[in-house]
Image (cartoon, helix red, strand yellow):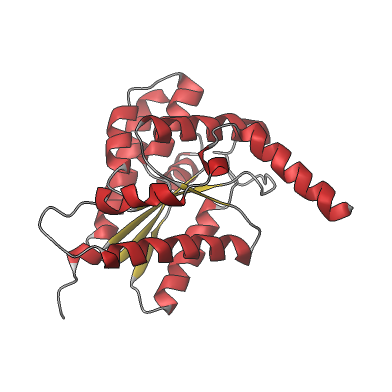
Length: 232
């Protein structure tokens, strides 16, 4: 079997508040890419597995283990596949550690690791909240978690795209983002010293003003306006 071209390996991160469709999107996106002949693996969220096994949510001292295990599984998949879609990364653990425990000690390592991804997608707040497992806290936590996530990404100058839409539309928009980054990677000649920053810096040109907004209330007003327009 021929060795994979390491310069074409693609790492995609799906980040976002709870009940915004990350897990389903990761599975659907991997399936779409596999259908295109790209060996893609969706790495599931370790937190869900941990909570189901332990029958509770993790406490503050256990957060580092959650983050490290998620990273280890992502890297194991990266060694196998041409494309990895991570259903959350250590950065989401860091976000919730600050939100729940006022603990920021995971931030530095989580942000450094996040920079290794070629593409960071943040799932928007346009999906209805659904109860699903003991790790979910409620619809009221989504706006502040979303705002905190975006603040951390901006603080580290990590570009991201926000994915909206319902059902197949959400996956289609994510796939468009992936195709753009693939086109960008293909336009960069493989060379020594290649890093994901070569492509992630180019993503900044694709972010709209609204996508740079860290105010979730702005999104709420946007979707309320869309609903009113649809009724009129």
